[in-house]
Length: 248
Length: 354
Image 1 (cartoon, one colour):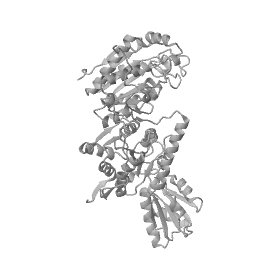
Image 2: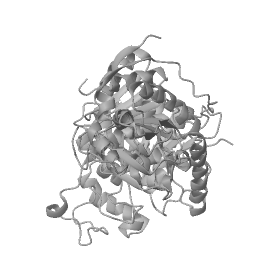
Image 3: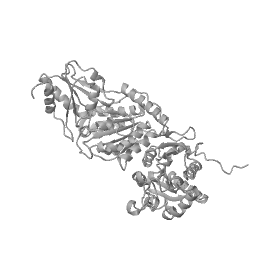
Image 4: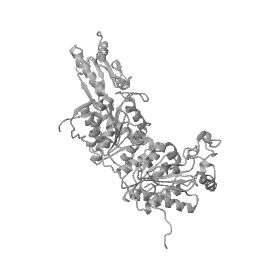
């Protein structure tokens, strides 16, 4: 009997703490599968964020470093400068990357640091209990925007991939989603390209993954996926914003 | 080895390279700019890496990453920049990683000024960042001592798996003095860095660098272990110098370049027949308690002299345990204590005329 599917070696045998219906688990799995398929798991060092994925260091089956809120790109820079030949990645949410860590994230791209960032955008602060993020949509309710986000008060949601596409050192920028099996496959392909970009020494690579937060959105997992498609995708279009050959 | 004449900040860089420091992450701030400038020039020649970060916050987190990867790594800054680095310093201490941090102190609060000061005493000895942690903190008084301590600091950081801070006021950074670069040996047997994030190569379980412990009992246990380490430092790493303590009527306490001004005052007063001693802490943490328990019978009072409005004086009072009256003389904002003013204060204390 042939094996058609098995659990990746890229994750340890541990139950995650993520809420039911949360897509972090899928994103962990496809990232780990990519590291395994590229044969770099034993040469990889991951940097975990502060946020829902704060415990990512307990799940990935490679060396891991837990950073302060928003500082994962700086920590990753320190590691990569010590080990230029190893694969270094950060795994960050939208509070971590798009708010407190914008300076570190922009400058890791600006330096063309050869690391890969998995940026999970669920339009809200998850771990702290559903506060407004820079990525929260207009009209979306959060515990710190109880009547819904307004442009006048908080500005328009930050489009991180579009912003990073203007940075020369960013070699690969893509936005994907994990709302359907087909999109999960596309997301995995993008993550693989991003890591390959790092391995080839082409520069900074980032994959923004549109993600759900059923708990803090106050929806069922299925309704969350629908909400993501109806509300996030129009504002945060999927696609490649930058490829290694551009500007070269 | 022959002596060389060097500027303090450049000598710090040279000492670090001699100690095997291979990674330097910095950010410009006066009066320490010659350290990153020197490192940008010399690191590449010595198989090392210099990187200018986008902020002090980022620089210290790069140190955190490189230290976790097992490298000998350093950063430097000055007072407001050190305040920004406190976030990373507490993580480095919590995750028990070795790193050397140099603080060339300028006047505060806020943006303050760019002239020499010692008003970071509390910032460097009281943690500065969150949580129960301590840094080994050295305060050299001249450039020879500075380069010796910078070299040794890397061994001590590795030995204790703890950040080490070397504190110089702006004068130490900017002055020139002849220096001999010696082969400094700490005498410590350094542990293997088998905890570092070097990649598992599929041959071992993942190494995890972390300061998070959500279980209260785990976090308390971690703090108890850290405290035991700090107690070992208190036992083994205290350094101080005593000067002219025999028959001293007044005992001054001063560190860094201020101690040199106090020594001038002591020598001048000796010619007047007034005997004054000096306790010079070389480690600000752990603070030297012992000399205060062994003060000469002749001592009638203690005078703390600082380039601040009075910060170390709190530790002097703790160490003194109420035995003698403790007086203070200090200048701040970049103003330097004058020997004559120190002499006047001492004459006042011994009951003589000004």
